[in-house]
Image (tube, rainbow, N blue to C red; front, side):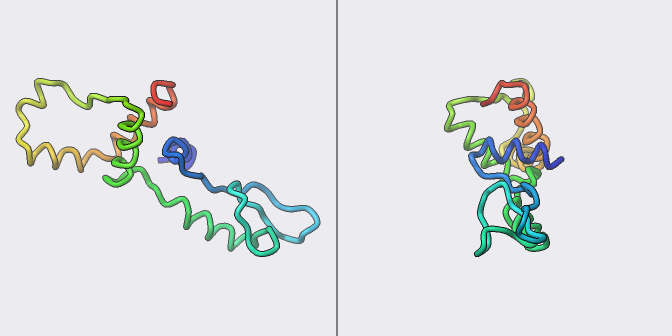
Length: 122
């Protein structure tokens, strides 16, 4: 998943996305993050800022945990997404269903992303 897509999903969750905002003027080779958190003097060395960003933007939206966070957010908004056709559901055994759910996290995160992009989920 591209960073642009991960940013959309991260912000949908109400979490802050971190990226380089720009280089400062008059403060040497220092940089700013879009989250506005800073080191002591208000600016970052580029290497430290990259570490900060990598530490904060950990969601891949390919895992069961990330899908669960998205699903919980959708549930809190009283929205519902039907994942499969009713006929298919009737033939699944409970364990097969749980396994299918866990194995499809990446695809479901992508479906949620598309729904956000299309304005279906806000």
